[in-house]
Structures are given as structure tokens and as C-alpha cells.
Image (cartoon, rainbow, N blue to C red):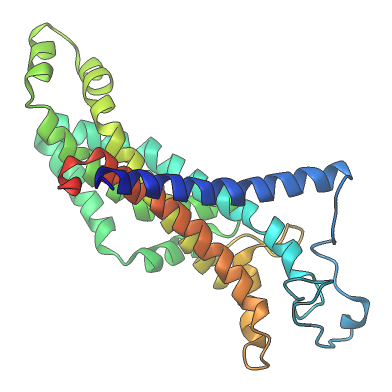
Length: 287
């Protein structure tokens, strides 16, 4: 087997995992709202749980992943619970792209005072522990998909900035860039038509890995009560783990195991894509 094929296999495996998970969530939601398929109401507790009776039952043919402390079917929670998590992760990456990439492009190309100021600001954010910084921002902004995505994006914008800036510092010295500048091309043309296309592979790699990090960070913030509101929304895997931990000592392992497994699979899929792309596009990693 050629060494170059290892990265490609990682991309295929990671893409397959993501496609299966996303298709599962999208198709289930569509079929449910169309009235074709609705296995259980994900937010409907068992009747005898209203008085506080513990209704967590182990996996069975009726409930293949068991039920939680309210008698809600965990398998149904797994089908619906990842939609909010993916929304937050994708939105946070889009914010990172909109802020970190242009800043890195201009800082690396212009240099001077602008570069020093931007680098100092990004290094200051990068110095904070990621989860601590996200908790602080989420505490100020409040709950919700957009606020959660902003909290996560602020943590990872410096990574995009540093990667793009380092690439630009090298690319701007290349002959094809010098030739375009001598021909009279303006700075936006040089940055977005000549340099940016050569930086996109690095952005794709860090973006894929960033989605995985965002999934884990979103789960952590939700576990701490800083994620999406619990009332009036579809299930969330972070909330499922939060309530599942209360059943740990009682032996109801399924209440936290399956949500945790789904989060790990989702994050692992995006990580495999990012690592695989990095190996495919970076010849040094194939030596």
C-alpha cells in the first residue's frame, strides 16, 4: 500500500462517518415533521415519571438504547440531538473564516505596525485556555445558538490567523506574486486572486479539525449549562450527558454512554477528514 493512500483513506472514512450521522439526523427530522415517521416524541416523558419516579430502563427490543430518567427514548434523542451541535459548530467555523482569514492575509502581506498589532491581539487570545475563554464569553453573551457559536469562534480565530499569516509571509516572496505586483496589480487582487487560492488547502485542514474541536467545546459548554436553552428545543447530546451523569452511581450506564459515543463519533469524523487532508496536501507528511 502506498503511503500517499493513508491520508486518502482517512478522508474517506471520516467523510463516511459524517455523511451517515448527518443523513441520519436530517432524514429523521424531515420524516418526523412530514408525518411519515416518528418513533417516539423526543421530549415526551413517561406518565409515571411526573411524580419523580426513576424511569431509566436498560436497552431492550422496545427501546434499543434504553430510556433516561424521565422515560424518554435515548435512541430518539440520538437521532435528533446532534442538529443543534452541528449548527453551532458550522456557524463558529464560518465566523472564524470571516474574521481570522482576512486578518491573517492582510497582516502577513502588509507587515509593519498592522502585523504587530494584529499578532499581539491574536497571541493574547491564544494564550488563554480555550475552554476557560469560551466559558467566560458564553457567560457574558448568554445562551443560544448564535451566542454559543461566537463564544467558540473567538477561541479559534487566532488559529486561523496564525496559519494564514505564516503562509502569506512565505508566499508573498514567490516569483509569481512579485511578477503580479510588478505588473501593477493592486493589493486586493494579489491577496484574493493570487495568494488566497494557495492558502485554501491549509484553511480546509484547520477548518475540518476546528469543527471537531467546536463539537467538543459545545458539548462542554452545554454540560456546564451555558449552551442552548433546555426548554422548547430538540434534545441535545450535551444535555443528555449532563443528566445521564446523575444516573452513573445507579448503574444506568446507557443514559450517558450513547450520547457520549455520538459526540466522539462526530468529532472523530471531522478529525479524520482534517488529518487526512493535511497528509494528502502536505508532501512532507508522506515522506
